[in-house]
Image 1 (cartoon, one colour):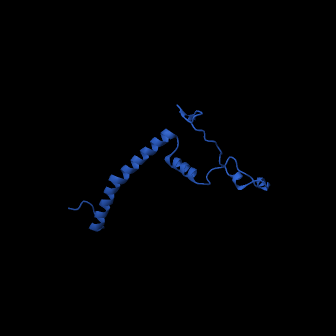
Image 2 (tube, one colour):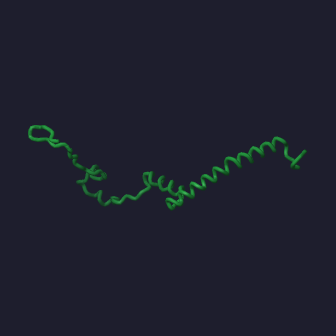
Image 3 (cartoon, one colour):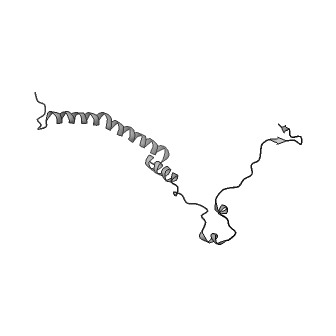
Length: 108
């Protein structure tokens, strides 16, 4: 008994059945779950997950931000500047939390 009249070979029919099962039981549920997660993320954060990913990626790139204290070339004309004066490091003094008396004993 033949249910469908097709000109396909039996191997091709088996391949189409396998692809239909794969599509129905794997691809569609994954797309539904992904769409639900996309909707929830969009409802919570107000933007899509792709936009969040692209923001994080742009933040990690070395030239992806604007420096608030950009130095222009005219400051390089001063002869008394050294190479260390152009870096953005902050000098700080470390203060110990321990206190010692005049005999060298730690006060608690």
